[in-house]
Length: 284
Image (cartoon, rainbow, N blue to C red; front, side, top):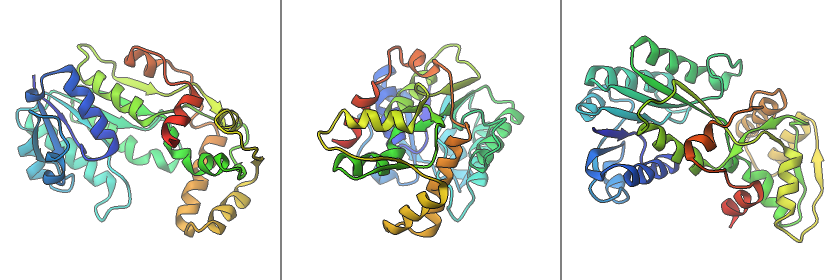
């Protein structure tokens, strides 16, 4: 059985690859990266590194030939070639190369979600279905690391500010999502869809968990989106980035990440890190 993982030089891909190498022989793994030289410096011994450029379907097809199971890690938006086109290239290459199964990192309830953030994922899921490829959609909720901009200032006594009101998100550590992805890849009978998430919590819960880690007192401020965005721009963020970060708050306030699932701990085979311990891990 040959396994492959795309995007192995990113944080998610690096963790998934290391986890997979603990589950199957390294010689059965192909690591795909746009920068092959960089990947060769970090992959576990025995892993084969091949070019994995989402914008080059021909080289992708060559690299995926002989692969049975593929962990397809979604790319970042905003590149010269759209994420949608990049993803369609990967799906077509996998189909042409004869890949027998794809696990794809997607968005919560991507087939039903209304937010623009889900659009590329919905298209990719449908492309995998249309290609008649056996699959698992790994619908990752929200990385706790996404909240470092709120958490870190409060550790030094600054205000913890949010505009998501009582909206809840299923925060978990990026490494927990990545480790679960690797475990799904080696599962004999994986589910078609995994809604991966931690326990649903509010920003107030997040602030309370942060407070347990510091002797500093800090204010917890629930504001509206306009004030939240202004705070971001006042702190130095450009207008576009501030708008995107504010959109995440709106996403959570509107209930898009409010999830009730045990898929993530079930696949990992153990409980997730408690919230305060997880915050400590990403801020140390």
